[in-house]
Figure 1 (cartoon, rainbow, N blue to C red):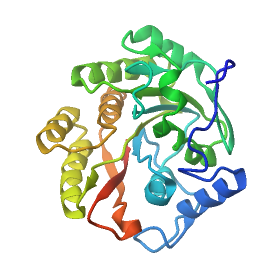
Figure 2: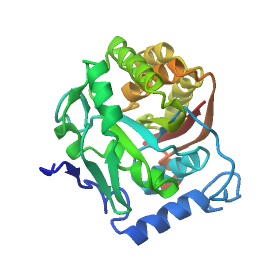
Figure 3: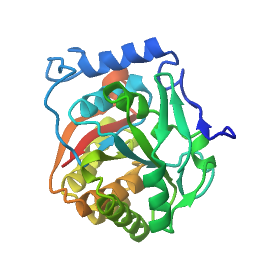
Length: 285
């Protein structure tokens, strides 16, 4: 992390193209291509979109999960304020970390941190800690940014990385997040995104079965039920904690419905179904 709090890309050129032109072309294909989605029809770039409270996006390399992410973001209005919540894969930094100052760079340009909202979250939720280290090399939030920038160049973010999976803690953070957004009067301009992949490295049929159970709990807006299923079925979705926080916050903000936009696995791309990772795009409204 730079001294001036500019967080530079950690996985550009690995998870997604490293150049502005290449990245824009890649996203344009993922959002609009008739060859990517099951319905065989390319969705138009500009259309009437769901005024979502929140959503779930996958965070693998664009080759694997970009179609799901692109289709999902294309279904919603990307608001000016985005709270990004994702898992900590590196183990670095605080267990519940937020950045409240600076900006993030991607090949598409600079994204400012919404310091006002982030600082209010720090003030209202003492479980969160100001911490840059957890964010420095973590990919789970970074890979979402280009899709958001593609639709709204004005976005500002409040990035939160989570290592803890204690449900009571996650629900408390979610409620504090929802209350802060509501009290600031910015509900209509705020989108909450939970970044997660689903089952990791299991046979295709088993991964689908487990992921269906998790998705059903998410569609019911039931973080308790999701936690129980993740534990009972040993579902290896890496962003369970992020999803739990998001669901708690979204319900506080009045969300009542959810829609599965797309589900795929890495096997749909590689044609190797012996060991797959699942990817789901879900809208909460």
